[in-house]
Image 1 (tube, rainbow over the protein chains, first blue to last red):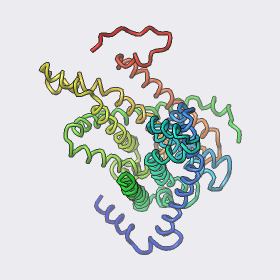
Image 2: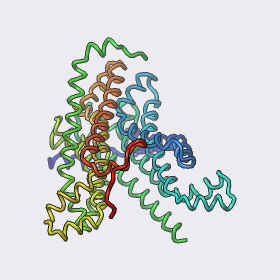
Image 3: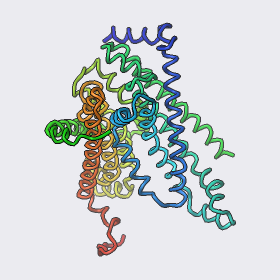
Image 4: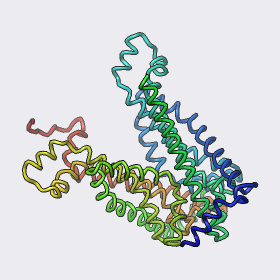
Length: 221
Length: 226
């Protein structure tokens, strides 16, 4: 056990492990690239949907059930199925990651919109604001903290799951996990797992910290 | 991509075995999660400083990728069902702990005070007043944890377990989509049925909340006003 951790430690800090095409630096960049692109695509799909449901008040049922469906959908299965259908490309990875991120963004956006005080909306309308003005000048600013939370949760989940890209022969930090499993190299597997975990945790802490700073200033002003 | 229905009927027995194994892993994890999170939640609810620590810790645990959790357990418990169950339990803990603490928070102070005033001992108050009143929120957590576990079991296929998840690796290695599709559908069905059963359990366990969900034609039950 002790030997293992010592090997893991030297694996993580050795200079050669950090450079080159199979180096941690490159794998980390790939991992972040997949994660950010997938979250961006998901946001483009999910934000308008969540705003629409929240603004009109229609389709809340869809929003609620979308989450539990998304929660139940096995990501591994989805990646493999799309992979077998579409062949070797990044499509399966993005489909699975986007499917994972969309529910989190839709529900949090909807929840944020839903939490806006109806009296504030009435007051905005009473002042002669039109539907889109109420949406952009009142509802979205008030819902912003929860919308941001949704995006953050989605990104963290995606970072944690982007490991799967390596399963269908692409890069990212999952490379170490799956190569290590195939080569029975426990140190490499653990190294990969530790790196993904650290990236996810650090990103989560950084983004929630940023969120706290941004919104504290807003409420203080 | 076509689904070969003959494969499904030929392997009905295997599919049943995998489904049961899948369900067993998920349910064991949720039960263990409940056993661990209940006392921890009571502690977190009573002792303020512990609350932030325990909830913060569980939030951090939640950001760790599931594959990483399973892999990190390998030196401890190896390629076994135990690894699967421990990994899943960690995830259920996050949801169950948070919801149980929130459930205990949602108990009206008056109900607690009334119990104290009647001389009910703390443990009895917890078991007969607080926990029942917290049940709707706790059950919401149990539902999320169950559906999540059922979905996550398949990740354990990478460490040689994974119930229905084995269909994914199998289909992947043989370039054969039918088992993969079957695995996804069975996982979704399992989650759906488990969730529906938990709703039913909650309905039976919390008769006092039913009035709110009264159907339009139904007669309102008469109740004394406070």
